[in-house]
Image 1: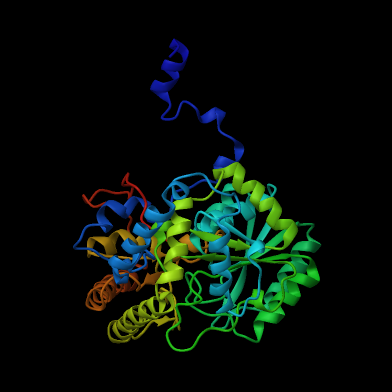
Image 2: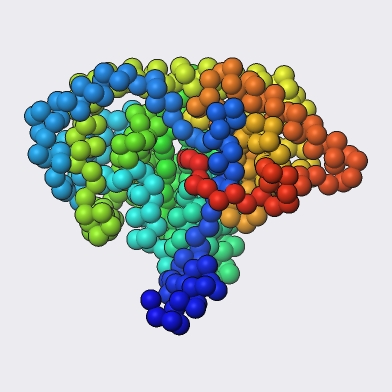
Length: 441
């Protein structure tokens, strides 16, 4: 290291700051990154992370698939594969999507390293700095991070109990176009939305698609939760209506296990070819091992019954959360999801969910503040609660603790007109704790 560089290193925390690409300015830590070290303690009830309850998978089923793959196809499983993905798995995925009304061919599918990589590839393919991406308000925090990293301008479109509002979508497109903005795509999670928990009404789906087609805006449909319904299935996927101008993202992370990191993109032919080229430049090929194990699992296991098992577990936990909210926080309002992982809770006016989070973790309960799900500073009075991982009795304890925190904050607001002092866990001002982030999916 030269003397000049050594002297610079002594002053700067990062001596390479001047060399980074401009787009890295869009990279930022998650809302709860600084609290992970404390929130991950076993005594803390975490209602924050969207982690599937993989313990419900039978160990023997996965072990049998791994053993069969290695005994019959080991060299292939450990080798590079196709950038598009294994043909046999793509065939099986068409059967999975058929449950959501989608008719497609295996050749239209590109396998990705989780649907998160699919979203990254799509964004990289279409976004130039300053381009507009439309999303619901709120929207998935992982998507917002991808969009920021490619320097997109994210514009939120209002939603209600029936999902994205068609009239608001049309008005937003017209307004942005009049202002000279370039809108590339609408990103939407229609089924059991993350974080809001609501489902796009059947009557709105063709209307939303018609609006995007009329205005030449691509529609990106992200649907990791669609098969995790509690009573009746949600309406057919938007992609089931038409295949023009729509990309569909799917994943095995919620219906099997996230550790395999296997998702997919269903795309029109021209887009599909470019996605394959991007996939090859990014990772050469998705994991052959994971793809072959999942293919074997889908061929030999009763995967539909396994999904039904997940539904039963998550339904019980959803019910536990809604019952606890009704008992301990009856004065507040929240969504009532018919599937998926999440409840969206609205706080009393004046409360700040981000500022209140350190106080909640001190009371041994964690959640995700609503500000994580907006790109424009919104969500301060909202909270995402996840019911997928904790046991029902833990959920009840967690909501009881949260109610205590909210009650204390309400008393502070009544007395002083302010609340949510940002403190660390040694009692000093500030809330920075250097540690890795929790799972926010």
